[in-house]
Image (cartoon, rainbow, N blue to C red):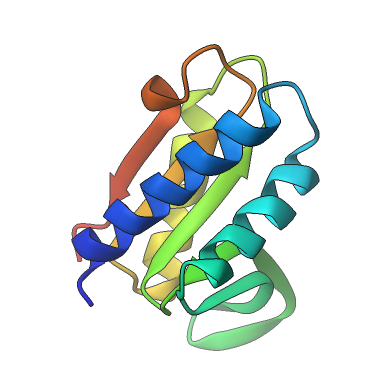
Length: 125
């Protein structure tokens, strides 16, 4: 399954979660609900994945954590904030570079219109 096909299915699951729960809840609630929905939809999904950080070809003694990884190809970074900031996009872009993944989705559930709050971030590998 391609990144675009995965993205299409993930967007459907995001709409389902948003329409069921609505805005204004904690990020962790949306993460658990989306994890459940994606599993229900038959996608391979992992959450809160610790990944090592390499610096100067050396693995550091610290990790960073991905919210969700779908089909080992698409990173989903979830937020429940008043407004997305440029740092949120930069964070996801860095995650994509560190994992050598092509596509990430940045989603803010604390909004009036979920359609305007799902953002594709592409790693130009």
